[in-house]
Length: 391
Image 1 (cartoon, rainbow, N blue to C red):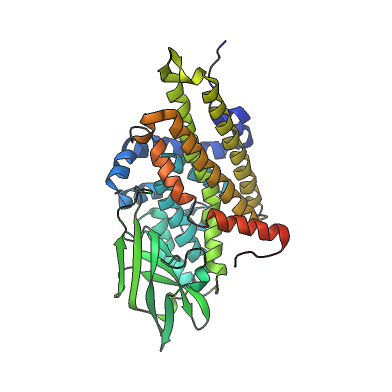
Image 2: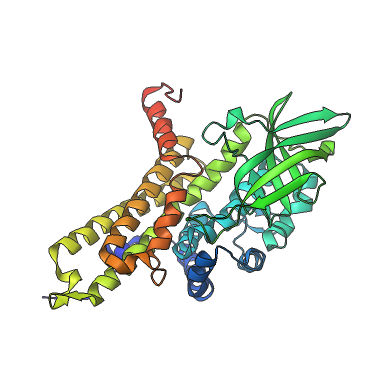
């Protein structure tokens, strides 16, 4: 006996948990991704290049850049709406979601939360429109999970600051107009708003990546970059600043990874219904159905978790530990889903004619960046025991 197949998230009637406005925002982004991203993203991934500036303007037209921020041309949408947009963008590609996430949740958020009024007026409206692109300089080649050890430094020279050092794995680095850079100073770790045309600033794109190929990734170098006193982000000092920004981005990842997982699972279901072996669709075999059922359950659980975190965030109740749970679980399960879907597609699973291998490779990076699986595990462990096990 057969019946009409259901979409994976329809099993739990997820739409029932969303408002009409949230569904409308999700559908607008889904339609954009279907029309603009999916027809070309395989080619972008293969070429290792994307039209970042062109896409930024289109994202700006849609109101996606800094969409959860208020004022300065930002849309002021809810956390859940932002999460749903991230999910649809990452159903297109993790690199596409990263462009939007770094712009809005890292660079724009840092200026919005910690910048001066002059910073906000100068940068945020153009960034919201996609006319200006930002990047976020925290990670260094030798200091990823331990940003407190960063070697980039800023020293006073009269009223100015002199910035020296480098940052690694910086999304949007070579196309950015402004970089938010975190550096050691005599006053602890401080953030700086650095126009990328400042003498001594350089950015070199990282090539030969096997993941996030439809994304700009760069190394930033600061060679005696002279900055005026007002380049300093005045309203935060220490690691609290960059970690607050990272929590904004990690929240989006909790939703975004589900988009990649959903696209993989929907592809695997469709493929298994069409692909015949031993005179029947492979979807009719018990082992295939077990794989599909297990993945649908994990996808649904991840979606419920993400929505719960979104509702907490909209009520200003969310904690960093809860964001770690979302990032840890959903990045881990999305990667597992992508790998299992790849197995269902067999040999066809390794070709860019299907999205699964692209998502799988991308999720290897998402699993690692903005807090590794291990670090988020220890954050949760510390919350449970009161003991820090980082060292």
